[in-house]
Amino acid sequence: MSQQEPLFPSMDEMLEAQEFAGRPALDLIQEIQHLYLENDKPWVIGFSGGKDSTTVLSLVYVALTRLPRKQRHKHIYVISSDTLVETPLVVDMVNSVIETINENAKVLNLPMSAHVVYPAWNETFWANLLGKGYPAPTQNFRWCTERMKIDPVSEFIKDKVARFGEVIVVLGARSQESSSRAQVIAKHKIEGSSLSRHTSLPGAFTYMPIEDWTFDEVWMYLLGAPAPWGGDHFELFDLYKDSSAGECPLVIDTKTPSCGNSRFGCWTCTVVTKDRAIEGLIDSGETWLLRLKEFRNELYETTLPENKDQVRNYKRRTGRVQYARGSVESDDFNEVKTIPGPYYLWKRKEWLKELLTIEKSLKDAGKHIELIRPEELHAIRKEWMFDPNEPDWSDELPAIYRAVYDKDLDWVEHDAGAFSQADAELLQSLSREHGVPAELVMKLLELELSMDGLSRRQGLFGKIESLLKNDWGTLEEIHAAKENAAHSSELKKRLKKELKEQTADQQIKSIYDEQLKALAAEYEGLKA
View 1: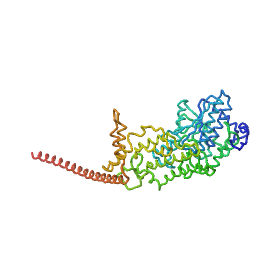
View 2: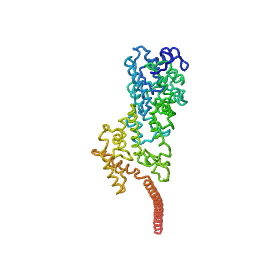
View 3: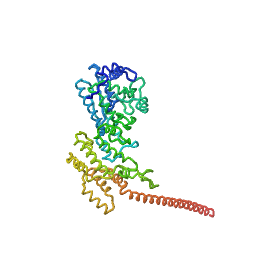
View 4: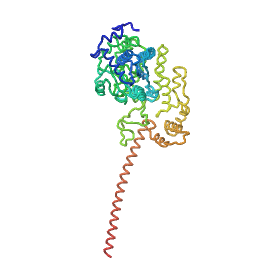
């Protein structure tokens, strides 16, 4: 409990006295109640734990508790999207509010429940970066937003649309935040209504009760009275003050700006050059976050052009080398820069060990923090075993975990596949002897194993052909093979042209011969 005191001793007194965006606070509460009672469409409140979404959650909570019990006729869902790499202090605060909301809902008989949604285990930040080798997100390749934020929230909303036909999504968006946000809000507004059409989800409408509020008004509301579910918002205020950050909004579509610009969001975010939010928290005394900041900076360093080739494969996950001026199939091949692919497997292994080491040291210091979940480790292990370029037949992930924690997880036996480190070493030896890439043989054996026992092996030859068409060997060997192929292609073109010319000459001669025969026959007829 904070030692600071709100301006008003109770929420009721503040609502009676204050105005926000030029209208009495009680007028907005009545608007929320009117919309709630208007139809049977359930509400979904997007809650990120930041100041704006906390304000909206508070307003709806107050409006609902002020209705007679018999008028609380439909359910309100509160959803928070946890990417599993959120700033730990924010996660703790969000979880505390969610727990309190659910407890109060039972005690007060409120038709309200709070839920946390997560990305699929094979689509988390670590499953993509450490498992598949995706590069750390940048402005040009921000693969994280859709997989980790939009998809989990959208699935929750679509489930409610399927059950109830339509839903109303309540958001803490404000026009003052940015001109692009203001344009999106205005574009989808329904004339004569407080609702807007959702930009991408059919059957969903959005309601933004504080869209006209200013930054100062939001804090005036939060610090003006105790939180309606108990406690106050001074901890939230201190968190903002210490970090000098904005909040990371609940993202529900691709048009909603994602995090960046020092917002509270993922501690792993490399879209920005510096994470000023986490730096501010460290400066304010949360020095244990320094290890996370240093690890995040390591990820960021790999996004710099001069470092990419050192840690990223020259082949894409498709198995092909791709060039900045067209792909490797181009016949007019030039020696141009390759487009880097996924992180090398050795780098991913190195990072996983470092991440687990940081996690263990924080736990040993009394911080109950999980930086990576066991389910993610299982997903990463599977990705490594069947990596398209560097299959990890040594199955090294369990050993990495054991080296850090001196214990094992409940590893799934079949995740290890049918091959072993000894098999990989044998293939490497045969590869040197016969000049056939070991990785190619590995992928062919994996394909055969995957289709073993099937009554119909439909598509097998197509899959084999696809593997054989991939680029195998070192980058220099691939360049040499391509140059040879280009020369062969040029020779084919030249031969084809010569053959075409010869064919044309033959056709002309044939026509000439036929005409000559016809004239000879005509001459013989005249003599007769």
